[in-house]
Image (cartoon, one colour):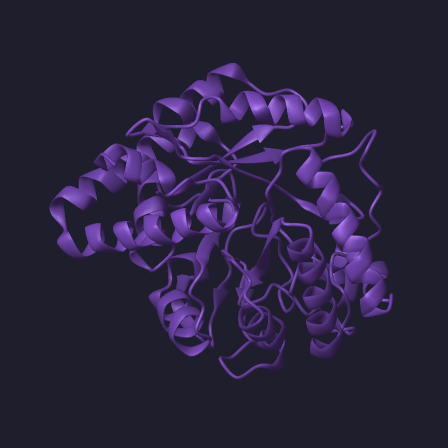
Length: 340
C-alpha cells in the first residue's frame, strides 16, 4: 500500500443512506477511504439499500489487482436510533425494551436483525450500547437515557444484554462495536451537540466498565471511544485523544486487541475547538485506529495531516501501520479480503 492508501484505511466516512451525495462519494474515493457509514434515515428497504451499497463497493481501492473490501457500517440499535427501515427491515424496539427481554430472546432477535443488515450489504453495526445509565439520572442523561438507548440501569443487565445482542450478530456474520468507551452513562450533555461534556464519576475500577470488559473477553471486534472527558481517568484530554484511556486502560488493562473506532470526529461539537487535522492526528497518536467522520469534507485535511506526520515521525508511522493491520484483520475476518 502507498502512504495515501494506508492513511485511507484509517477512515470511515458518513454517506446519507437515503440520498447519497456523489461529490462526497468522490471525496471518499479520491482519499482511498476504506470504510463507509450509512447515516440519516432511510425507508428504502433491504433490496434498494443493497443496490446502493454494491455501488459503493465498486469504488473500493485495488492493490496488486485485488480489491480491498469496503467495510459498510450503520447505527442499527433500535428505538429512535435505527438508520435503515422499510421492506425487509424489522422495527427494532428501544434498548430499554430489549433489556427487559430474556437474553435468549434478545440473541435470537439480534441474529434476525443481523441477517437483515447482511442482506442489505452492511457488515458492521455500530452497536450495542454498553453505557450504564443510573436510574437516578435516567432521561436527564441526554445522549443515552433521553433516547432509552441503554439496556438497563445496572452493570449486570447491560453486560448480559450487550453480550446477547453481540452474540446474535456474530451468529449471523455481522460485526458489532461496543460503545461509548469508557461510558456515557454518567454525563448530562451529548458530545454531538455540546462542548465540554464531563464525567466526574467513572474511574478505572468502576462497575460501569464491566459490559466493556465482558464484551472484549467475548471477542468484540470493535470498541468505539467517546469524546467526553473523564476527570478521574485523564482530566487533560477528551477520551478520544487520551493515551491513558486508549493505550493504557482499553489496550493494556482490558486487553483489547481489535479496532478502536472514534465517535464522530467530523461534525461533533465536542471536537470543534480542534482543527480536522488535529482531531485525526490526536486520535491516532493516542492509540486509536479508525476515524469516524460523518462529514466527508473533513477527510482530505485529516488524511493529509496523517500522511505528513507519518513522513516526519517514525513512531507515528508505526502506529498507523499497526492500525491498518488491525483494520485489515477485521476485514479479513469479515470475508472482505482475499489474502493468498
